[in-house]
Image 1 (spheres, rainbow, N blue to C red):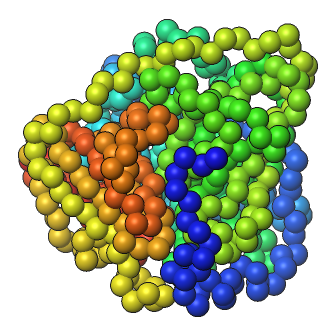
Image 2 (image 1 turned 120 degrees about the vertical axis):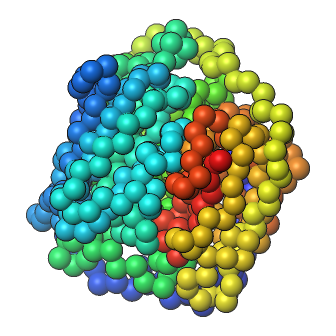
Length: 483
Ligand code: C2O
Ligand code: CU
Ligand code: CU
């Protein structure tokens, strides 16, 4: 019951050419270590920062670490204030922030605030490189609605490798509108953050970034499904209703999320914040980079097994039965009933009226089956080329067309956009709110509208790109300035 068009396996196999047949993941030597499954669910530390002269200040130290994913061995990783992944930064709409990002690696890196509306020089894209040993301290105001955002490495041509190693974390933002709603919001009690990723390990139990041709085509994938760095953890839940803030933090995997018993759950937020009303569903697809918040009812006392089914480009690797066990929710008791769902959530204004240009973006691949030719409007990313400029305050219409046989999740920095239509049809309710990353299937044409407010800078650009990180690194990216 997927609301988005699915890609048939045949189309994909045809599109991926002989590469799909190689399915290298299947030919790898069996790892000597098994994933440590069934551990208690845990979340990254919640970090509300500290206050300094009216600013909320976060100290983020990026460094190499070691984390246990597998039974009997530790794996070399990258983490931010921890061994793998980073903290959950907690802040409030309207806050003035300072991020102190200390690069403790032996190579340059950047840290990008995905989904945030901020000055381009503070964005943390590939132009805000942090040298080894240096500290980068951007300051900006949090001009967002309540929601779940994230941050991750964005070094030029190294994004995929850095994120694979663990350079990512979550930002959760609260505001008055969200406060007033009867929603679960107590972190660790009825409100949980889930960073979904998959990884594969070599026979020594390590996860080197060893992307082969197939990985660079389809996006790097692995057979071990992780939630916050844990393989198939178990959560013993006290509350009758849980709020799940889910980030697809994978390099290249699309997850079709559903429960083993096919139960109904409700989506309450998309990338940029709350939806207008809860949307009931039995499954939903999250593409790399996307976030969504859900309400899960456990009042019936039955165990809920969250699964992710391989979707899109992953199918040839995983096979049609590519089901991953994500995690288990085990209610401590059955309840008489779950509290009523709020009928309305946030006030979602209609998309802004167009006041600026209409731009077309065509996604293509050249040399079918060859690696490295992922293009936007026939071009690869050029670090020295600004593709266009947007006048400050303009509400523009961006039309994205996908002529490739693969799905591409398109992400635009600086803005939360609105989807006007998908192949001429209005967006499904779950896509009708604020978005910064949108899945575009083969043959699809998706029209977006957004306004570029507040921050003009003729020098520092913002990025737009495919969020399959291997595609981004291969050049399916462009940059624009707001002037
Ligand atoms: Cu989530 Cu340009 O990135
Ligand atoms: Cu971003
Ligand atoms: Cu792509």
